[in-house]
Image (cartoon, rainbow, N blue to C red; front, side, top):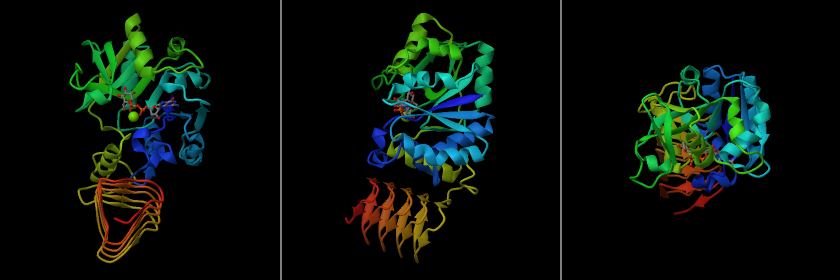
Length: 328
Ligand code: GDD
Ligand code: MG
């Protein structure tokens, strides 16, 4: 089975970090998010992934070979101009060779049982099956209403706050039959959520959805990226990048310099970072090469590559651009 991974968005909610990289390459436990998606595919016997890219597409080059070395060949279907979610799938039609396939929002970190999802889809004889997950605030997502058999009766993308008829949302993981391509126009912007799924519902086509309580997180905002990193440390999201998860776990990459009296709490510290004497890093994510000065304190922040926190400075709730120098 193949998986098409949507990875062409600009990641606007994660700016300034996404000025220089797609959000899919931001770290979870010091590994690119997309590598965790590859792990999931490998764990469920997916044989090949197709990255659907557009924005900063060349930045994915570095993850392709290592994935192949781990047994997951990855090819790329790049849009010259972004075609939106369904347009991007259509643009990769030729890479699907006739059988049932998976499609994913590439910014989703999950431990969904893909085999179970595919079996469920096949048993229903569905054209498309949407994985569902519960959400506290469904208005930030695609809200999906089904009948008892799982048939979708309405798909509402980002309804106004308080207007969602259920808290079950589109997890951004789909099982699709190749006939889905007949429903998508080629070479133009077309949305899975705003056009394709509503059109399937309106036409009475077999669109199904099924829920699970597996770990799930869309990492598209700084608080969610921080949460996903903490979840990997405490073991709510299981990854071999954190071999011994727990309330005290931290992820410190190779080559990190740690001074005397440094305190790192529930944080991930990227390669080659330098934490000077007395520095404190709490519930934060540091990309490679960050320097935290003597006695400085970083809380609930995501710091881009090479960020410098001057000695004694206190930083909280900050999303800092690559190379930023924070002096108070
Ligand atoms: N190739 C390509 N081209 N990819 C795109 C494009 C495009 O034009 N536009 C968006 N993507 C990719 C993004 O990079 C991301 O990986 C994925 O498609 C979803 O886009 P987001 O921008 O992250 O959407 P969202 O989080 O607001 O909402 C979507 O995800 C929710 C679950 O996380 C929707 O699918 C919701 O219905 C869903 O609940
Ligand atoms: Mg998203």
